[in-house]
Image (cartoon, rainbow, N blue to C red):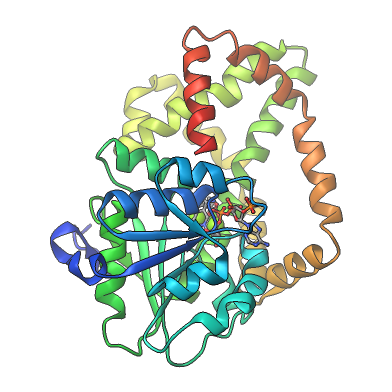
Length: 345
Ligand SMILES: NC(=O)C1=CN([C@@H]2O[C@H](COP(=O)(O)OP(=O)(O)OC[C@H]3O[C@@H](n4cnc5c(N)ncnc54)[C@H](OP(=O)(O)O)[C@@H]3O)[C@@H](O)[C@H]2O)C=CC1
Ligand SMILES: CC[C@](O)(C(C)=O)C(=O)O
Ligand SMILES: [Mg+2]
Ligand SMILES: [Mg+2]
């Protein structure tokens, strides 16, 4: 075991904010990442203009939050750094619309490498291309900034024409609050492939399936929906919080010896060598571009499979049971109001 990181990690003292405080950042999109980047940058003293479609439902929200708003091409014309924070699938079209506004020495900034790595966007040769990819959903990036804690992020430089790309990206990360927690240097390829694998196999796909299969196993065996919900979904957060704070060891330290023994002997029977083989297959589809092609074609066709799966997820019994139980939590009313206001921001 070693304390050493295998790669470079940057903190507040490694980043010089002046690389960005004399610049204008055009943040295109005001969704999950967009609102967090725009507000965090703005409150860190950076000049920000948000780029939105004229009929965007977020236009008023951004203005009410004290931000300047313009159309994407006007914002890009003004920006020295153009941060592309619209959904991955619409980025190529948005890029096409703003490409002519880029000047030599400007920066195209991403939060995920999909379109660069899979060649859906081909940037001009005379601009810098960087990535600061926060390792969290945008609403938590914003919450962490406001609460004075930080969010880890990845930094990558794809093109450096000015010689300042990395220093500027670090300053951008600092303004987001990411160097408070640590910024890890990587490449567009590594970020894209690990991010896609992580969200598919573990973070979003893997965990949601594990929860639903566990819930269904208990309910099908005659146990109550409430019991199954609390056991398989609600308690998941409490267990993951322990792992987040102190690793898997801290979780096993805190649960009973019975849970520890049961978990260590039964866990590998559930997520077994077949699951591992499937993970390897999923990773291969990310690496060889199969997933990217499938997702691009799915969008071109109007997302038929996405909509079908989305409806099935929404209508799963665990969602109805969860909504009912969460509405009865003692703290839920106030929390829900706060959460809705935060998500709307
Ligand atoms: N979600 C997350 O937390 C994370 C996302 N990322 C990456 O960040 C980037 C942004 O993702 P995310 O924040 O989820 O995106 P969102 O889906 O939240 O983006 C929504 C925003 O994009 C705008 N938008 C949508 N379509 C268009 C369009 N055709 N033209 C102009 N604007 C449009 C919307 O404006 P309107 O109001 O007009 O609809 C809205 O402001 C992606 O690259 C993603 O991979 C990285 C880490 C985590
Ligand atoms: C885990 C999902 C994510 O990669 C993220 C929040 O980091 C995303 O694409 O939203
Ligand atoms: Mg991610
Ligand atoms: Mg992702």
